[in-house]
Length: 577
Image (cartoon, rainbow, N blue to C red; front, top):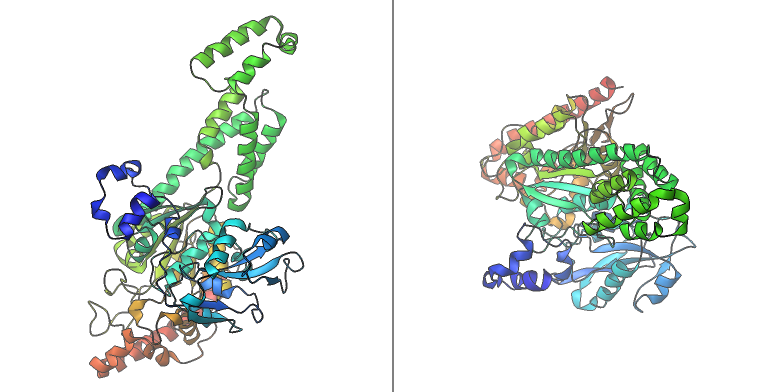
């Protein structure tokens, strides 16, 4: 794939490829993780890490849109074999202290040079320097990703610990500083090795599924997110279909496992493994290990037909089965001649049937990705249908408040006074409250997040959504190139923080699984600076130059609506107590 397709396409020679080059990929699948081979080296400036002043908070990795800066924990052997220029230091705190060495590895040839990591570093331990001075760091990064294992002592679902987990989205072609990929990368770090994604057409399908250079990757066991693109108008339904398809297969396997534990010919170890799998059937986290253990026992305990034939030729077989030994031996030789690979007793037959679908045993984390143009507008009917279904799927909306991929048209997520195509004189109608519409069902988990404003709340919303045994909707505020933020997208995360602090964007979580206090308002009271926030983005400030009188009226209405919205959310806190 990489040599025969990706390289010619990358050189703009794709039109010279013969049809025969695509025979192995005729079903439309492409090699996962191929983006790692590009090594584009497009940024003249990349970050340099200062280990001495670093607080090891991992915030830089947490916000990196392209997964090009990552922390690693190294044991003695890994540290000893690391490249000589690897900057290894002791852990300052936590379970890694005294046990592992810490480093922050940077891939200069994959970095897009956005500088978001530099802007979020609380100790100023990162600075942008010339690419040529950091080229030797590529060897360090490549060693860390290839040779350093994940350490269970340091990885968890906190801001720091989540970044010791492998990102299953890396080196995408998204814009420098992109907020969408920061969110998507984080979701893959939490669930990537057992994740399914249906992706609506839009920015997230462009950076998520470019032909031949997939940024979605796999771990050393070959597991990673399965990803498929669908259209604007049916992505939610497509995602529901993917979920229901694998659910049906898995439910059938459950019936077989329940039958297996009742068979007298099934060994004790296999029965226990099957019971453990059944007990954790609906627990996404616990079921991963249980499924691995179940598969291991199935593969170890199922009897190959050759072993059966060898056994029934022994004296022990004659002692156990007496006069039936020759009959059973003849039967085994017959089924082998017919192509059977295993014993056909009830237990082995069921084990073989389960192993045939073993990839479906572990509980999948099913996600439906898309932008606001899809979720608020064109695909809203499907989103509503899927949420109403009650099925255990997660919908994640990258809300840029505009149709980013198609040139900046206004969507129902666009706000009052925002300038966009089809709203050249400023949008007059407030944005749709998609979150509250979903909350009216009463059984849908709903959250609004903004990574740059509250990383802990972002993590909490994502993990709670996955843990909730029903549909979930997460709407993520995503600053975009289309916003024309002063200073550029290097300020992406800071702009999220400003949006929340002034009250432009609100953080909250609605969790139907809680017995009380189902609604949590995570945003504090607006701290002022609302108009300053609007003027920091050309999507608003340009209106003051083109239609100054109209701008003043619309901005006043925008701010008044934001104030009323926050007061309304405060009332929801009381209502859901």
